[in-house]
Image (cartoon, rainbow, N blue to C red; front, top):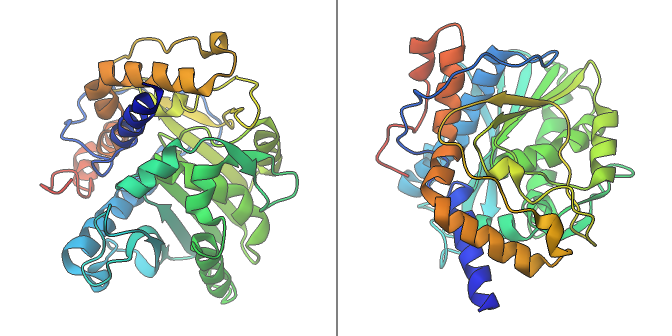
Length: 347
């Protein structure tokens, strides 16, 4: 029974973390409140980075359908590097010309800006990483605390998956030219979790850069109180971080937060920027009553997810995040045309 419930939980997270490529066919005409009072938040920048988060999903489709050479970014950006995730073709769709990889991130430039965009969950391997929430040390900066093993494994825990080392090498190459002053980081869902991990790492370990700005979408919590403390200590006038959250989205509420459990203690970093669309979900169970029994917590989440799975998917869609922000921006009609991949037949 308990093994069955864990499998069901895995399937739930595969759905709720955007196994459909981060998008659904919701038209984005829900509630569109004005941004809350978050100092320094730039709505037009959020829209720009939201578009690049959608591009990361679209690059996966391009590689599956036509191979690595078909991967693009929209004008006016210049594609500098595509970062590939090693995956098994037995479980996952892979690039047409390479059955061992799929795009997980890209680096692009425009003017004096560098952009790093991480893709969210779109295959079974990613979903397995999403549910691996036991924690290990985050060693990319001093006093980094503990973060989710699954997210860190995707980010680049060891040399067999050198995602972060590839990104850092390219960033060093670009910044050494002296032509770039600003680094922007973004991602949705799993991509948001990777952006959380990247912000302190890039802020302290990328030289020759003036500012680092991270806006992510629908991000789950990734670390414990020490990670949060170190993360927030890095923030400053030129190290800025925001997380954009649909108030109806389940995923930013996961893993369950506020529990003081061994190797399972999660808190969110600051910088929450709320928007609202979709359907309000029922309240989550009070996991504090479970005495850190992670199996029981998993069973309760499984039941909750199966009872609300359609609304969970709607409330988590990156397409609807983007279209909601567009409706709040200065040019809603033109902006919505930039919703890359949201009207395709591809997932």
